[in-house]
Length: 155
Image (cartoon, rainbow, N blue to C red):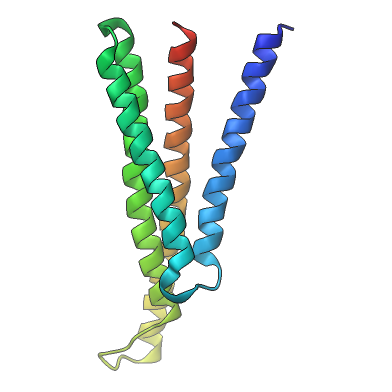
């Protein structure tokens, strides 16, 4: 087997493993016993959002400098990065908010416990959905990276 093919596959596997580790880290930070105001989760989320925004901007800037034959592939990768950025930010906001409401349940209306338990169950389901959305964000990032690397190889 060609050494370039072996290196290409190992590089992709390592890249996907880093994406999986980053997604797992943010999920663990959200689900772990929180620091005041979820400071660790928010700090990691800010870094992740900034990283995704910079990658998106760089990809679109690079696509603008190319000729039209390669531009479409790069723009598709940029769209995947942009989707990843938007999904990540929205999922982080919902995850932290829902986790906070699970930790500090309020009953301003004086509802019976049975009604409050349905609210807790629905909040838990929404938290699981928002955590799954963070995984989808990582998937869009992986799709963008794969497309970007494939377009570089075609040059």
